[in-house]
Length: 165
Image (cartoon, rainbow, N blue to C red; front, top):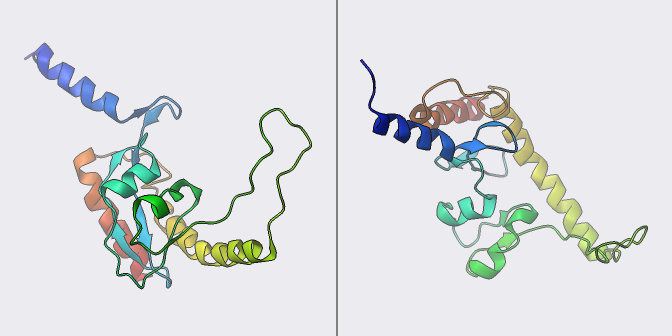
């Protein structure tokens, strides 16, 4: 039996939504929230891989109490402007002198900014270890060879195993 052309078009459109031209493969993205002990406490549903990290954060951010300090990399620098009630920290970035100026470095950080970035890096390594724990199971690093609707369930299982360690 042949499938109707309309059905084939729907399948092609579904595949196309998750295709990354940069990576030349079908990609999905998931964000994890990790506490200070390295336990994964929240996982977002998967979205297409081309979605920006901050757009995903705006769509399905976890509701954190006011006393909890959220941290993110420089992709989350707009959180302070958009979510004023969140206690959120991002590292400082050196401002460049502009395009086309070679051998000209940006302004040096003050001692306070260096201290904040160093403390941020020490806390960030806990998140990177949790990410590596998930990557070991090849759900991120490898190709997911199952139906896309099973991805979130598989991701929850892997996060549970990583937390169990």
